[in-house]
Amino acid sequence: MKHRIGSRRAVLLCAGLLLTLPGARPASADDAVLELRVHPSRPAPTLDRNVFGQFAEHLGTGIYGGVWVGKDSPIPNVRGIRSDVVNALRALHVPNVRWPGGCFGDEYHWRDGIGPAAHRRVTVNANWGGALDPNSFGTDEFMDFIDQIGSNAYVSVNVGSGTPAEAAAWMAYMTADPATSAGQERAANGHRAPYRVQFVGLGNESWGCGGAMTPDYYVSQMKLYARFVRNYNAAQTGSDAMRRVAVGADGAKTEYVEAVMKAWQEKVWSWDIEALSLHSYTSAGWPPAHPSEKFGEDEYALLLKDTLAMDGLIARHSAIMDRYDPQKKVALAVDEWGAWYAPLAGTNPGFLVQQNSLRDALLAALNLDIFARHADRVRMTNIAQMINVLQAMIMTDHEKMVLTPTYYIYRMYVPFQDARLVPVEFEAGRYSHGSITLPRVDAIAARDSHGTLWLALVNLDPDHPAHVHAIIDGAPPHSAQGQVLTAAAVDSVNTFTAPETVAPRALGATAGTHGLILDLPPKSVSVLQVQ
Ligand code: AHR
Image (cartoon, rainbow, N blue to C red; front, top):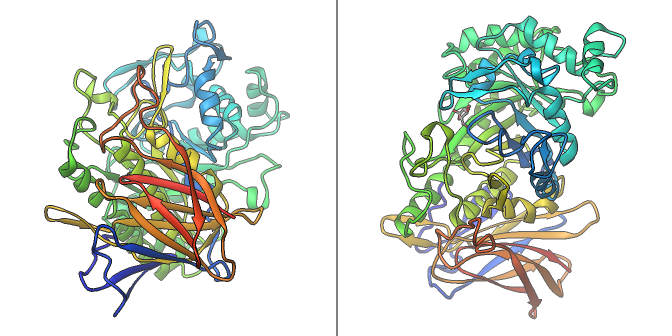
């Protein structure tokens, strides 16, 4: 949803609601003080930590080079998985990792990636640049990786070119008791105990690369996979039971949403799903042609405008889901999202390599805020992708590694994982560039499990600071401390030679007579703990 700001009205946001208050004071002046009201005693949902999930596909150097370097590599590693990347990811408390695709997932045959390394088949990654996949990184290596980073498995099974039997056998390999033949095979490959699989994706983009299936055809396939791909891990019960994610919307298209939700409403005892996916990238046009580096304010404003459309998209799909599922049992899982730009010059276009700038940090924060405002329905998302691909957290080049601005947003937002959201109302103000007008400020608030109140604030205006006066109902604050992420320019990036160009620094705020005075630098994201 675009937060278009009328010139005579202040726009207030209240935990997902867009309210305009007639008569509220204008907030158009660059130096106006914007008011933020925080309502800790009002009810609001919890922000599921799975909203901070990630996506790691066999694509370019996302896995090979980015995660897997092999046991004999001079790059420090544990069982072939690079240690610098693991250490960086641990700080993000990544709740789940979606793997192995993406489009790759619908051509992945899990048996190619188990057993002794020397016996693994070398296959062609037909979706992504025709690269050879040695299958050295398979199921057991993925499970080792998520164990090393302290995360959970979201495994996407092959619906496009596989069979229910193949997917069922894979799930048995991962989760069955060691007394079964499937469990014995896993034990022979080094892991006796069943793995935990928290999420299973029933195909990927079945409306496109996953087989160009009509909605009805997909629904009949989905029912088979939802029925037969069983998780046998006896420890995964109750709220820990594996959740099945069906293929849903391609951006704004609603056919799959209608078809899958209608089927779900009419379902019989033998199958179920717990989530429906939505894939939506920020590219301001297709195919992606906008630059990820060396751009100016035109590109900055355009891409932020485009990304704010996520709000309307979620509202639209949620409204359809509400018709079939008013109790919101089925979650909306935005399991592919992020910025998708033109490939960097000199790279393989099939490897989806792009730079990651300060703009991407704001873009990530704005989307996380949107997901928070839809937390009752959006209970999982996966940014695309984790390493070296699209809007990555981390970039590597052989032994070198650099953390991107997007990485820092995910680190700053850790306190929001599983935190109880706190409704906020605020004057968003207005940032205009050419024909584009956007809200100047965005904000969310939440209380963590220790009772600490957190604020996250974005100032979209690249030229002017935003002065925000935060009033906390019922508990006048005396100070706030946290971090702010900003840089010299909207296209500032971190490189291997200048890795700290966009890095968080400390930010504090003191209390005035009635509340906190927050001075948000231009083009910045701030996360503060309120005392
Ligand atoms: O993330 C890159 C690709 O984008 C995925 O493989 C596919 O699902 C989507 O179209």
